[in-house]
Image (cartoon, rainbow, N blue to C red; front, side, top):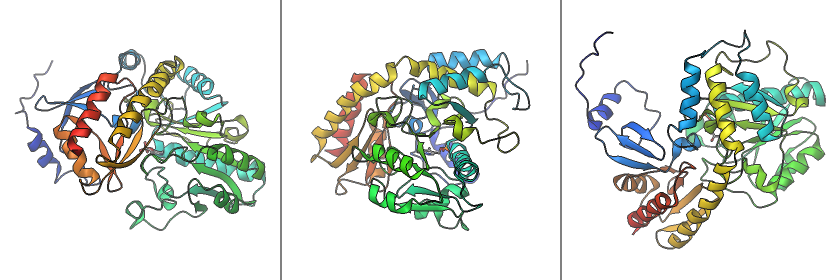
Length: 407
Ligand SMILES: *Cc1c(COP(=O)(O)O)cnc(C)c1O
């Protein structure tokens, strides 16, 4: 064994300063440097503890280092971690079977990041449009919603309407039509014989947890069926227990043709994403037409299977639904007392802070000093999305901290 190099431990402030010249400035993190985490708690370099009310944008739905997930990863590390899809691996069949069963769909295309799942969904929908629907070559369109967030690749930012995400990154990929979210008439008007798919988030996370009216998802389902195009639901953030059901579309008992999953699918350990779809759609792909070196690797498949097993118990969905009541009533009590409004479903809320009290960023910094980590979005909105393993007491203490910083 080689002796560990002696390094002088660096403070949080030193580490933050050290990042500045060597790390791209594409984020503006809160000034907390996490060195350890367990469950809903993270600990910084100095040993201060914080309640994680962001949970990696829902990548940590099961908390940090959930024992069942860590065990699955450890076990797999001692077997085989990467094969590439040039060969089969003994974990992939079980992962795909479990995910298909959990979602009620037929087939799985394993990828890694959320953006890759979205890109893959777009490619599959276009191929389906040409081969099954009969759209003339290179004419396929995909209808998306304003305020969307589907990731950061060049094609995906091509249909974003957020100037920060787009400006300076053109030229953009054609073939997308943007209509207002939660507007079935606008959607109906945008869909035509070239439309391969309607791609929406059942709840818009980055936009500030924007929840459409009851009936919207049912309307999208009926409209797309009538128009003979696909319904693609991006559940990368809304899915896998967050809203009190396995999927956000379950609130209206709607089954999309294509489901995009990511974030929590990797259990907070490895990036795992997937396109899950009916056979008629994913069946259009043939060998060589799409792929990923890391997609479906045995480590990811083992962790993904363990995630599916946790969700199959229904416990996390139930917790999100029950504790969502606590979250909702806590936020209702604060309305008019520092918050001007909120939108919540399950353990997920977008909270509009009274701009007179501070920006979302300022409130996030004040909450950090109270030992609670959240993230702001769009000016004066903060987003609450704790691990689904949070206890009622912990949730109530986070709400008490919020009340304190708003007072
Ligand atoms: C986070 C997110 C993505 C992109 O996922 P990455 O893993 O960051 O590429 C796509 N869609 C939605 C709805 C998301 O929340």
